[in-house]
Length: 509
Image 1 (cartoon, helix red, strand yellow):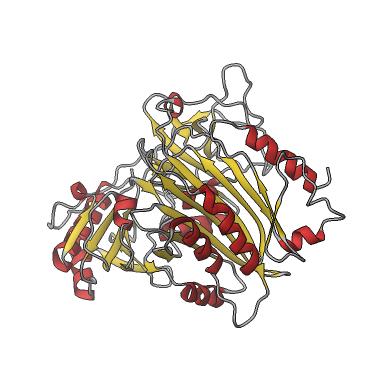
Image 2 (cartoon, one colour):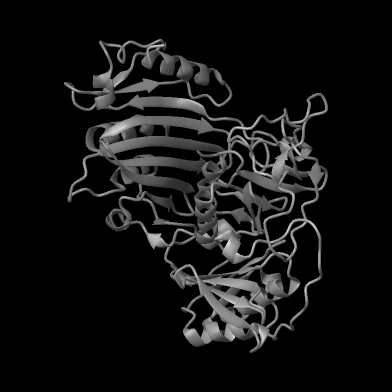
């Protein structure tokens, strides 16, 4: 299993400290750079990569080490330095641990996980054993230091950490896979959870969250389908009463070893939408499903505004955050951990520098009120579009502020050029982490249609409704947005039926 080892230090690791860490394998190890010199690789005398080290990141947001690692960190601001060991090389794991231990010792701090960083001694070199089967992707082939296995169908990342988050490593792997026309499959051990920031990125076939399991081998952490390594990727195992998937290959062993890629015998898929069997559901996915009283309030909305020099991004998200929590977000970043204090102006500057390419960001709340949002900013023919997916978590003794939902919608409709908004209530964890087991779907609380969208509909279709309650006008009386109240009871899925009826009505079906 690949090891990510992280040093959390009070002081920035200076060049001499980093050099001391890089000498953890002795003076015979070679140092290369990648990613426009943002990644340093420690290699053996043959150029074989052993450890990849990312540039230290200054974290100015409290609670991120606890949220993502379950670890205590120095008071903010502190420095976060990640070292990633190459898969299948035992020497590499020990090198990464010693590197992090040396940084923590010299720059004042701790290393995670503690058991991986107990020694400061030089790690002796070892010759890898030859192995058969799936092989590790070298950096030149993988296009990303985070990719462990590469086939003609997918890039595979093996993540051994408590929370699979959208780290800079993983974001780079997503980009490399997309550029190569591949899916991305993330493999993690049992007990790992998924950050909401990663969940939506794994929704497109053949991308998957693959969870190791003692009883069933592997299963999809989001759907529960039992998986096996076949045809160069993880694919569902058919249920006993269903036939094999069209074009599926016999089950193979998935054992990453040091070497080169692609895997011999793997064949490209013919379609981007394959015919998959009805899969067997893993027992672990169905166990431990109970109502703990915890809830999540999920908000998804889209705004479109004209592009001009006065435009400031993030204002719509901050307005909703304040209405629902009474405070602004705590921090943001272009990867996890979110390392910067919340600043709409700085978010705008980053998006402007990246234009016309889209900008993706993660926004987090304080540890006292778990909240996480992803923001995607892009240019369209209509202007600058912001797509926001936001969730807040509540314990059994906390009530989600449903009465504030309409106020938040009013602010978006009147000040932020709202296109549409959907609010749901879910039976899900307060800490927002996505577990590898069944969680029921959210139930719609409200839907909002922006003023321009209402105006574009023929006649009074938007004002007529198949629902029991009439829509509520928001904003200007002459050109209002419309707020459609929905049941929002997590124990009653009839809210989805009402929502579907409303959508068909608005589409004129």
